[in-house]
Image (cartoon, rainbow, N blue to C red; front, side, top):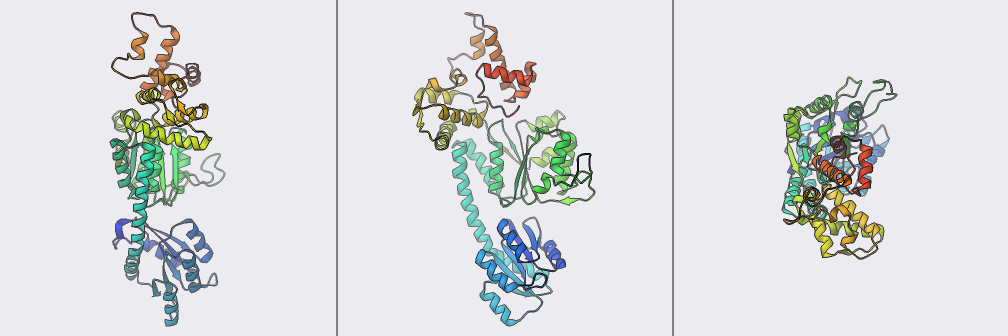
Length: 475
């Protein structure tokens, strides 16, 4: 439908109901474009199943469905009873004036005789969609207001977060623009990705996510692209990959910087052609998928270091979104604390009302290397463990209490190696662990490598020094 302007550039869903396969195929091909998704059904049963799963804007309905023995005018009435807002166009090879009158009374938008003139059909659909466009605009504005309220409560009211939400609001209007979300561990990259999907035109499609750092190359390749039966030893049957499962929806690639060069090349081809092949397959499969990616690394630095493809970098960064760490937007901390306290009070049946001035000041001064995720975990732990209404400094985790900021407060390293005392080995070890985790941006696997110890040993040390509150998702 590309030769006809799409009202407000929103996404529309069409359903073709006809018992002739050639007509279903030809109409699907004629009407499908980047703003329109087309489903087809042979009769009423298939059509109602699609209507239950998708928000259909317009139905092209054959009047006589010989293969299923159904009457299109009766289906028209049933469709309208179940979905009064859907626009229905009747197609018929046996047009009669009385039928046209009956169809119009039942809510048919247009009554067309076969064979259809595709150009005329497109103009009729364009006119019909003006009503749907108004409804979608109202729904879009409602979702945008919801976005501002919900995300403000989750991320905070700071100017930096306001800028992030503005970017989310703008990019959500597109169903195709690729987005790269960058930020430290725990800032909420996946949540932002889900909100981009939720408030986009493809929000009724699936949201599929995968962490590229959790699987070896061959398993990640199979998960993304799927495989044909017999493609490798364990391929006992054909399997759809995440690219197919995310068709007409969103695929979120977390930790994209960890993807191998081989898979980077294959992903680039998908982004360029919107086609791919299953492992062991020869047929190109076309998908209409929105791609979102996230990383806690400086991806351009990875390009300069030769670890990431430059052409893929530019394909992914059509719209970049950067989420600043919590320490750079401390004004968000009180709002986040209130949000998490209320949530965990409800969940755990508790009545923790807040914090003393001293304890709140310590929470504000702490650097939160694990960002919002660490703050959320601390709030859950405090609500769970405390049976008092106001949490004092004695209830806070030790690492937060001992991390007071201020011009007169020496750093842990300065206190450790002062002229007045000699530190013991445990103190040195604790500082070294904290410094390594900070240097590795919260990635404890890398921190263990920097310290020359195993991940299990690092876990043991974290428990020993009561540093468990540092997020552990990178293990």
